[in-house]
Length: 80
Image 1 (cartoon, helix red, strand yellow):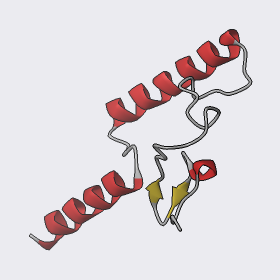
Image 2 (cartoon, helix red, strand yellow):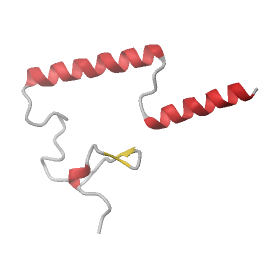
Image 3 (cartoon, rainbow, N blue to C red):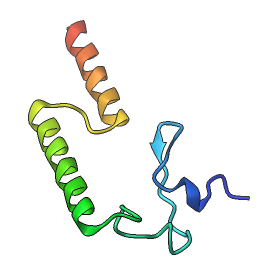
């Protein structure tokens, strides 16, 4: 029995994002915005892009693993 199901696609489990490759047609919806209009999708995508751009400009990590790596580097710098 598999550990994850198609319904877990995109969820964060144990600190990692699940990407389910063999799900139903609904789970494989490539838009990432099931049930939303194209205007809603465009607005959401624009907001996400702006957030990621701002995070990249300010050095904010995008994910838990990136943040952990940043913290490790900071610890090493303080130890010197």
